[in-house]
Amino acid sequence: MRSTGRFSRRALLGWGGVVGGGVLLAACGAAPAAMEGEEEMAEEEAPKAEMEDTKAMEPRLIVHTDWWRPGGAPTIQEYFDGIKADFAELNPGVTVESVHVQGTIGLQNHVTTMIAAGEQVDSSQVSVAFILNWLLKDFLQPLDPFQARDPESAPDQFVDSGRFFNMHNGQTYGIPYDGPATTVVGLNTRLLLDAGLDPSREVTWNWDWDTFLEYAVKSHETEGENILRMGFDPSGFSLYGLGYWLYPNGGQLYTEDISATAFNSPQGIAAGQFKQDLRQKYDFGPKPDGASFENEQIITDVRGSWQVGYLFGENPELEFDFAPFPMGPDGSAPGSVTWTNQWCLFGLSPDPDLAWQWISWVNSAETLDKYFAGILSRAAGRKSFYQSDAWLARVNERPVLADLEKIADTSGPYPWVHTSKANEATGDIWTQLNEGAITVQEALAEAERLVNEVIASGGE
Image (cartoon, rainbow, N blue to C red; front, side, top):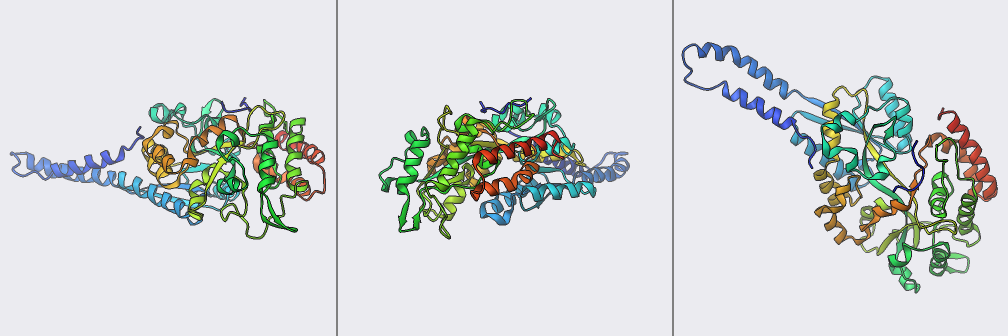
């Protein structure tokens, strides 16, 4: 069983060489001054050479699905345009077609429809929120045979927070990608300094609930009943929204054997109450219209470790840092919720060797250096990425990126067990709690019952 506790060079390029060999063979067939008897043989062999060359150059298609949408951000557009063009250049005759769908639920539905209709689908980015569901439906095929031939794509080359989610029945079903992705506290360092507070990591990477509350209260600016700047914007309740307060208070979302939930505990109730007090007791809200962390009307905010490039794109002058969520009274360290999504190979891929070549190349050291360090400013799933010259240069340019991946070490996993069904089942409960219509104790008890029913049913 999987633990629910803390998470403690080149890819294959081969097809270019095959194509080059075919061209060379055709050229040799045109040699002049054939000896007697060779001319007839050359005439007979030439069509065969042309046929081999034609076969080598025969168009081949890879279909990749993803909820990352190029229209969503300029860097995402540049990323997908770049990886598809680079792979096609390295592999003449191969075309990558990417299908982009709004949201992870939309992607699940779309891919299910494609498979049912017999349409080609080779690879996908697969969220931790639904990888278990796809494994149980046998959508994906194990990567172990491919990785055995490609040591640079072996499981031990990738971060532990990703390897937690991609194992099933002793086999590996994904390459960890885009992570560790961790929910973090965004800090406007300039405004905290203006409020007489120390935003350095010596404080914020070691803080507890009391220190966090002091920072939020002292930086909060009001004029009468109007909020000018929010000291903290507390997001709403959900399984995920509870998790990043729960883990730093020593709690867990699930039992060790994943047979039931574990969040309705003293640690969970205390974490939920502190989160609720930020909303109701300390009046961090409602959020003023248009207020955001990017426009500096919110001083500390719930953000993602992957958003550095986005934030600089929205406000190049923003002075900010990230920190883990503060340690609760029953916790041992600040932490959060973390995950690493996967790139996976579909069992129905008509050309799995080519699809693997694409997947492993996208996640190779060279590709990650060029696009994750150079374009996206995002953490990547490959361990060696964090020592690469490209990443270290980016960190030097944007110090906020330094060591962000280490927050995953004291964090717990995203609520990954039948996520969609669990969220659907508990949606009304969280709405009532967000509106203050029920207590934290009532909400967690009812959410526990509903999620346990989902787990018992296998997500059906």
